[in-house]
Length: 313
Image 1 (cartoon, one colour):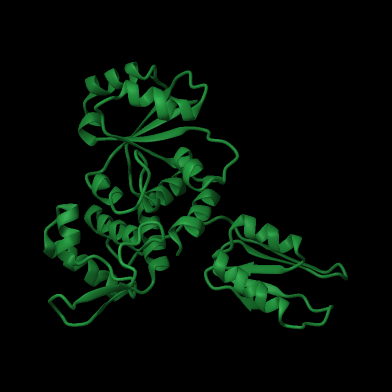
Image 2 (spheres, rainbow, N blue to C red):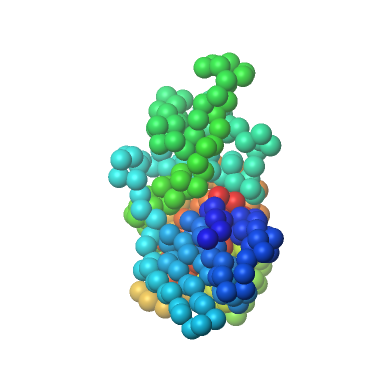
């Protein structure tokens, strides 16, 4: 076996380089072992005649003699940490910290997270709430405080961002959320998002998430089955306003076969979206990861692809 860490591309490339340099006898079968390996990576390893094993998907090892070791594990969504009492505020602090630490949203080259006061100001939370949240993260081993207790030299570093992301995603995936399903004649998703909707919803705050956002940022799925959008909670909760928005976009509410899903924004979405360097009208990478997991099916694989290529842990 050759250990490839979390299974990200750089980890796998290092393991493959070790295999090339190993001078193994021809009859030996190198096996790349990792926490999780994306579907494209697993297929590539098999095509190269390498075995693989990970904690999420199982194992594939084939020998020239015909012996095959095949282990399939059922897809299991991220499990939320039962020892941590997640709340909307705690989830927002985690999402903010993860977005700041991600490869696409890195705010500090040294890896330091924003301070408690800065996070509290961004999320419009009391500093005591944020302080309690980061202490809980410290206790989980996700973060660690370094330097003096207070003052300009005090820092908090991310120790296990992958663990925090998995814990947050398990809670976020199971959390309730309100949505409206709508249908309309959409010939091109690009034209709908870039031209039609901005015209129809001029002056309205909205963001793209789900498969449509992933297709623009980290393409993986072969098609975009629906467009997922967020609108402000006050707009979503006002039936007359929503009816007007739907009519202006030539959409109608349906029970099935939706081309568009409109989700109620939580009160922290605008703040956490500013953390990541997300394109205009798109959620940040961490929120997108959670929303893809909510969709399930092949969107789970798109989420893992996004995690590997954009988030980085």
